[in-house]
Image 1 (cartoon, rainbow, N blue to C red):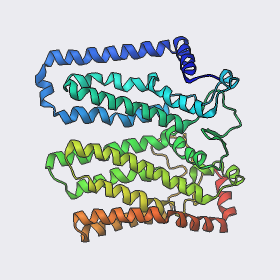
Image 2: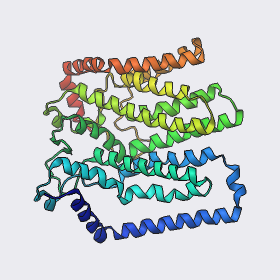
Image 3: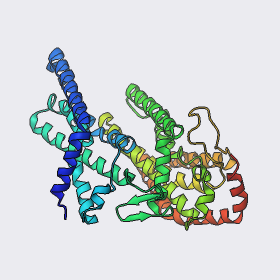
Image 4: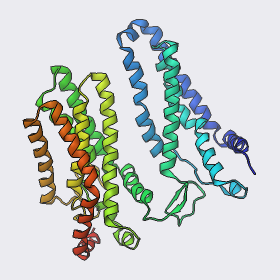
Length: 402
């Protein structure tokens, strides 16, 4: 039986032949970064570094954990399936999973962020603070790599007939992780979906930061920009309803699943987008010293209540062209009256709460409404499923029209 040390030795031997260019490229990149930072340090001296608060030198490297995770989820290939050589050996599945987890500690992709950000840690900060910060960056990078591998669950020796492969074995299309994978993979692979999210989120956040920096206090316009910065990333993946699934709804209909389960997955994807927005807002809070309760309450309210409102009749949709034009493209968007009513309803509820309830308590009310939406989303989507089944042939005929 092959031991973990033997698996590690085989992996290093493979890297010595196939990954030498990656190691050399990583070393040159780290060398260039060090030379760049040393040039800045010796040219400007300590005066430039002294003007920047030390909190910024800590928060800025830690904030790179989010783009690092997105980079690995999009571009890094992970082989979580045994190749033909290892499958011929008596390797238990539990030992293989343990090796996959341990191998991320020496994966070159997980060493990229800590090594390139090392100058940011050691030049402006004392060694006592820089070493723990670098260790935290390394642990976060390893965790990002492990999570990205768990999400992808693919390898070069995977059978073409398998829809998904998990650590627990094969799973059909109707399983939860296969359905949820359809949501985030469609979002990441379609520029039409993720580019507007990044562009609009950056625009609203920039307007919010600029206005707050100039005025020094939160105004009504700042609150609107902050709400739109939270609302749009959650709303964008949900506005097309079942447009992604409509492209292959006939195949989905033959699987042992329910429409309410697909709606639950879309709802959870909106919650995941809200969690990403909340993390970014938390970082902005530490850098700008602004109240964090307001954006967090917006996240709970939009993800919890807004997701229910926008997905209640998601079956009224047309197939979405994921790879169509990014801007000025309304294909797949059925601008029904219910969509605009839903948006106006969300804005009306938010405006009434902020108008008649003082600030600390209004945040609690918005958060409570969001949690209430989380609690009742399953029965609400089961009601939507019943409404779909009454006229399912009408909607399925619409799905066949491009």
